[in-house]
Image (cartoon, rainbow, N blue to C red; front, side, top):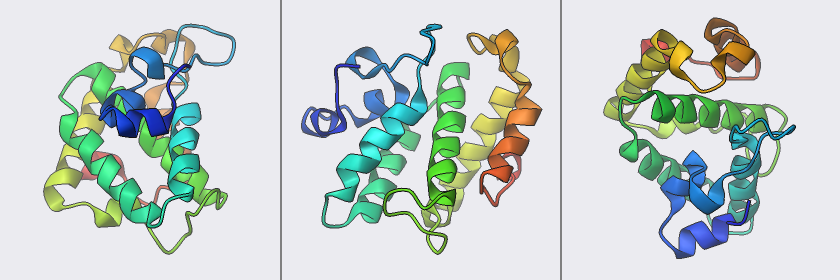
Length: 157
């Protein structure tokens, strides 16, 4: 990965960063050609942690990212993975996150509905996600997300 989150902020490329596009692509361990969302999410959190209002910026940047997503398997998969990163880091109290603040609680009903639409889309089209044949089935991944602290059934938004 060449691009860091401060570069994404300075270049107005937050969406590309969270999607892992271009210079913001982080290869998955073993270099199987997949983007490692956790590396980018942690990079964003490291940047935000040094800012004056990190949680508010996280909400702002996530909303910007969410507003860019379309009913497309890559966008839906990216969203699912980024939400998983958030809850994984929140569960173990990484960075500035705590159990009293929840990103989903900050979103509007319209934004939550979009998450539900995209999560249902990725569930129904998981076979089109690059490399899905080598991954856990999507149902198992969704159960793991709940296990890692997501208190919501994202399919019901």
